[in-house]
Amino acid sequence: MFRTTATSLALALLATTAQAQSSGPIDPARLSDIVKTMASDAFEGRSPGSPGEAKTVEYLTAQFKALGLEPAGDKGGYTQDVPLARFQVKDGGVYGLTLKGQARSLERNKDISASTLRPVDQVSIANAPLVFVGYGVSAPERGWDDFKGVDLKGKIAVFLINDPDFEAQAGEAVAGKFGGLAATYYARWTYKYEEAARRGALGALIVHETPGAGYGWSTVIASNGEAFDIVRADPAKEKVLLQGWLSGEVSKELFASAGLDFATLKAQARRADFKPVALNGAAFSADYGMSHGRVISRNVLGKITGASRPNESVMFAAHWDAFGVGAPDAEGRTVRPGALDDAIGVAGTMEIARAFRAGPRPARTLVFAAWTAEERGLLGSEYYGVHPTVPLETMAANLTMDVLQPNGPARDVVLIGSGQNSLEDMLVKAAKIQDRTVTPDARPERALFYRADHFSLARRGVPVLLMMGLGGGADLIEGGRAAGDKWVSDYTAKCYHQTCDAWSADWDLRGAAQDVALLYDMGQELANPGVWPSWKPDSEFGPVRDASAAKRAK
Image (tube, rainbow, N blue to C red; front, side):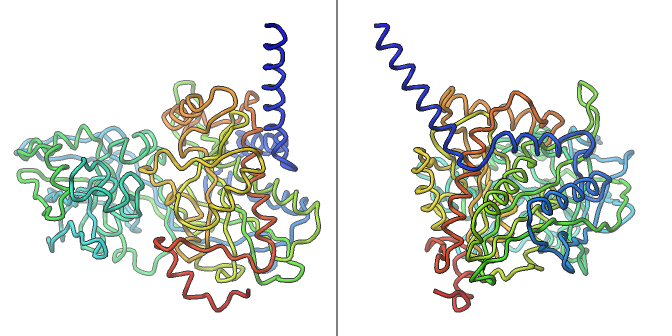
């Protein structure tokens, strides 16, 4: 018995050791050191336009230089200026509903979270009628139109979050029409605000429900009224006057006051014949001040110029920004350090750069990017998509890291956005070398594929892969899937965008190093001439890529 037990323990130890060593040149200790620095109070939560940004950009530039990367930004430097419009809701605003003639005040950050992306000093709305527009989807290619020509001018459009088939029951015609639990871009709050503006609405409010949003109310209010946008020529044309969220509790009260049952309306919104419903007897008012201005934030960009195909590239990227300083938590902490979201991704980008610099020069150019303003709407990467410093038509792939798990080696890697492109097949091969498998995202309803910076490149046709630890718990060596799921649930509920997303000496970053090593291994193959990943036939990004096919050499 003793020999059997001892043998089993020895085999288990060997297996764990093999997993720990599968990160190759990616060093968990270096990952930890970088995160510890970037998530320290000295960086003040790394908010764009803040003193913390200046410290962050200075640090990243110095690190890129020390790694031996060439500058890949503006005017021969390591940074790219990103002009941003910055908005801040002032304290002291008044928000409320009129329900059957009775005033119902709304408490900011408890009942409502609202802002504007128009450069105005005051948002004043008095007794605006409200119209429920279901999921607010206009998708002719899917035979779907929630609006049915309704006039939204001067009105507040009230939306459900996610897609029409998110909660579809078996037998309903809508089931699977929008990918089921795998959310489409129509599920995103950004789409809903954009559609409300296109329809001429005065404002847009989304009913918050944690399952459909993929995060709790604490995430909705994490910005504390601060918002950013790229600088626009005509903001009044592209943005509603007021955009935001209503808590689920207040929303149900609102519907009930109009004699409507919320659950019944949700079921009706899953039908193609749904028509917008006026919330009779209800009106919305708001009066709050805004400060606004412009800031120049910065992306940080370095590269290794390719030896034989310098005009072809592979990009490794993460975002440097977090949520800065906010209200004190229960322990009096105000800095939201963004350790896992996403200092760990930036650390992974640096480690990949270090590993490539230690070897022979690749055939293709390798670009290393640290984006600004991801948390404000993917703005840094979006600006780069409009103003790239290398041609996107000949970028073979963008490999992005955002929130890597700190719980030790895992038997698998979770794939975000399954079914999009052939990079997924390369990931399977790379994982097999590590004696790991690939598991599809267990929570596709959270639309993580559309919520990270790789999306800015994907929408321009570049094949992308997102390495993210929030797509469902990994099958951890210590604790299995249950432990991985628990970490995802706990982190999302308690620390995501909060003060407790801090560096910890108790982390085991061997698993994170494994995941970074997967992208490094894929990068080695992608750096070769003639390797051009492709989109799957049913991906919405394929036609964009196809339009530039002639520019890619075989």
